Length: 410
Image (cartoon, rainbow, N blue to C red; front, side):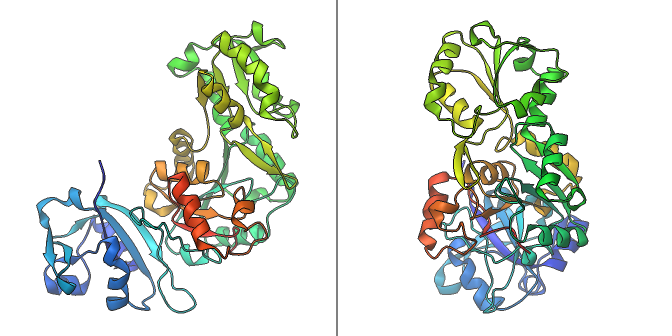
């Protein structure tokens, strides 16, 4: 069912008071008029220019008009257009999003990308500082956002230090098909100190925990004889699980897929193996949904490419990691922040990071210089000159980020 979204501009301090009270009574102007003024996407920017031009410290509240019932009335206002007016307080629980509205260098409000904006025109921010007054916790992607596989991305260490100094909670969320403590060790080797984030969660850790506990019907039915598609560095995924590893897929009861055996591999090289597995109806566990990664400046396939091909052949695949909601629930527990409107996800992949954030209802920032950098012309950390190119990429992928940035910087 399609929602009818309506929008209201609110001072940040008024929203904080409303959260404590459970309802928002409107601005002083709203109270004088006897109702809370809302706008549709078509009139939102005009309303901001007319009534809130240059005002700092504003939030954009998004609500579902249909959920507000008979208290919401559509009445003629500016130019005879119908505007939504709420007669009564706005329950905080009915607010889908509360997003900051920073000012740009010209003193104009920078709006997040609205889900009902047909043009999908996204604002590209120079850094994250303007958003951090509002958000309490962050879920940060690893590869393509914090590092490139060899070294931290430019500006990342400074940004993380500033976030920690501001007492922000940080969970690093990676689709790495390895145990979390091993990913932490590798992140430290790359040059990102462990004290600059609170927790790290990986798709490999989630996979390993399911293989260990066998806590749902799929895993309870899974055999113990495993054929592993993956490089030796992922052998940790088989440890302490009571599995029998075989080198012949014809003897296996299931496949654990952590990725290709080497960086130069192609999907075609795995076709005979996948065909044999499909003929036996072997279930596959995919510990990394990513399709590709940029390694040493070159594009390399990931486990997700092989799993996607196996599904095309009719094979059964159990996926773990972004964009699936389950792994985000682990992150929410680690963050310990009850209000998801105060959590921001930052990632470079529209298919996993941005789609995952959208699936669990949190705001997101799309990093342009990561996996999409080459196609967007943003690999060098510059803002792409072709805004239409960004819009086409967003529209082609579906879920929408709230903002974009070339790289993660303060």
